[in-house]
Length: 128
Image (tube, rainbow, N blue to C red; front, side):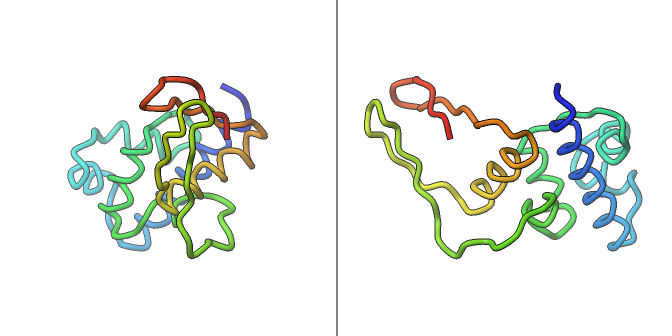
């Protein structure tokens, strides 16, 4: 894992901790609300490397009465329209929620890498 990716996880962890403290809940309470282990929550909030899925981030955001965007670093100028993703191989097209689009944008900004997805229809790589 690159330093940029570690920074991304650490910044999200800091934002989770900040929001949790704003709500006045403990790590133990957040663990119970999300059905994740205390060590998982503690590792996310610390500078210890802890990867997690978008689904886990979404679940934590909901438990903190917020959305994923508010937990992401350096997010600005949220667009009011949804984005479409189209596979150039098979013309599969889908609408991407704003939150996911901004999440991908943040990953690209921090890691300075393109994001690779797999088309659910033809199973070829889509590079964003």
